[in-house]
Length: 193
Image 1 (cartoon, rainbow, N blue to C red):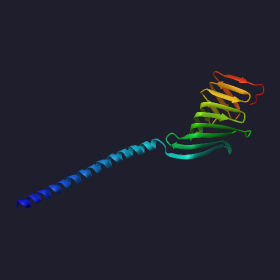
Image 2: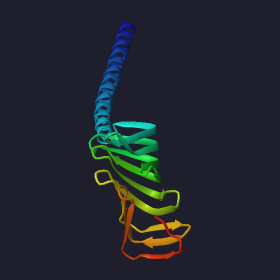
Image 3: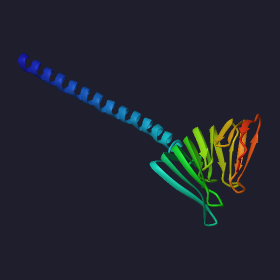
Image 4: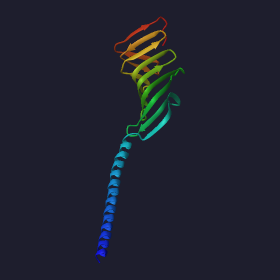
């Protein structure tokens, strides 16, 4: 009879132990699942505040009244709907002038404001046409006025010109450039703009 009692006690102990381990495992899975859901919710809300779309090899063209004003290429972009901005990498913009000439802009990074078509570029910014090359660290393009401007120092180099200025603006409609601040430069006799 003692053997039977000992067997029953062992069996009960074994079953109770299995039930407790099972209960602990179910509780751990439930708690882990709840923690994962909370983290996933935070992760999803983080994604919603950051990029909504991320793509590589971007190309966009802006036209006004059926006339192409600029085209933009970028190695990659991510779009944030909350700010209506496309953040760009390795940017190339071609501006089309009325006389059918082109002005080319390259930069490391850029922001295209999709609600206004304004562009801001930073990094190794270079603007050039067939005659001149402008270098700066930051440059903006205002679509409504069709003006390229920089509020940081610029350097312009060409065959007949070497110039630096604290800031500049270039009106693409009139093909006129305005330099401001400390302006230094050297010119040769044959200058054409």
